Image (tube, rainbow, N blue to C red):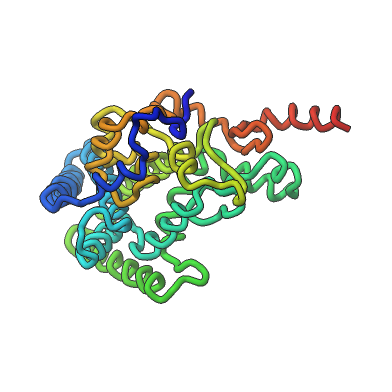
Length: 343
């Protein structure tokens, strides 16, 4: 497959392309607030009303509400990048509101996500805002307990269920070690606001009813969110490099996928599947990403992943520095045999 790094002489360099799409459009952003927050509230209410009929019926509007909650998270994400509104105050306000609904402290997440963008694909700067990834040699050199912990962590059933719930419900409730004052306060104020919402709704409809409605919504949204992030940076030909050879451009174009989703899922996920462009130009509003992709051939030659092909990523666990690709645990036997022959 041709790399995005290779471009025709008549193509415009990406540095000149990105600025054309970076200006947020107020009417588009406001409309996205309306078509995301309002349906979320409506489907949340319908899920509550359906409790009187059947809990199986409740799951239908709850799942739809979860889809809109994912979309709300994308709005929070854009606010964090300063791409949704020109006003910092507007970005902070709506980012905080979205963070309360998604159980995510806005400013702490914003800081961690900025670190992710600055270190994505850098083997020597792993650990903040990314998926725990070991190289083959690191895994084989680890203790038995660390290898066991790694296998548990990378198990899809754990990562997308227990892991996602731990991240959003527990980890997000605590400030990260060494966090600045603004980030710590973001956690405290978000926790307080979430508690206020829970108390208000519990007094209105009952705590049990609140849990019956909110639980499936937040679980489905959390699993979908972690799945999206995982697939954007965990595929066979993904980019990882040692710091001295690391490239921001290659990390974006080769280390972030174009996750080509069906149109309805693309809408609910706020075009975040155009992740290669997002990592190049994080200040591009989500509603401009598809246009940028379609109008510039240089972005159309990047790694494309579909729903069906993304399932192959389940078996990929370790980074093979020699062959520069993600591999599964089965590769370890082959690697050990090569080491024996080498000696």
